[in-house]
Amino acid sequence: MCIRDRSYTTRLDELVNPEVPISMLFYSHLQTVQQVKYNESPKISTDQEIIKVADEKLFYPGDSKITRNSFVIPGYKWSWEYQNSHPDSKPVKMVDLCSTYNVKKTAYDKNQQMLSNEYH
Image 1 (cartoon, rainbow, N blue to C red):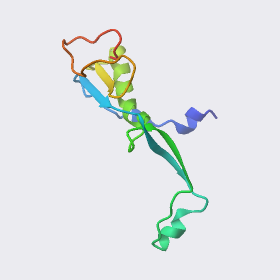
Image 2 (image 1 turned 90 degrees about the vertical axis):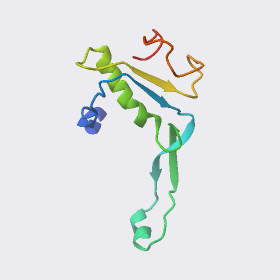
Image 3 (image 1 turned 90 degrees about the horizontal axis):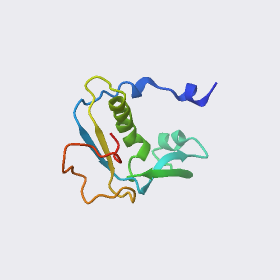
């Protein structure tokens, strides 16, 4: 069994396209907890009303609360739908506010058209 088969979910299919042009503003330069590991079950401590601190934390880029993957996946899905002529889909602009790639002075469009070097 491939890992995709074990992790596949239909929840991505349930993300309804907003059907309006949108700009997704985010930043992903902060370390964000992606996973915590415990050497023993935290339920034991919780049952005794003791807070169990994780023995190990794994980090991933994000905004310190939400990992980057969690907030860009809807935009990628809607961009794919737009590029593949999904009915009523509109362009999606994804703006990483702290990126050093394709830097602009503003996230706002001066015109209504997406440029060739922007996601849409």
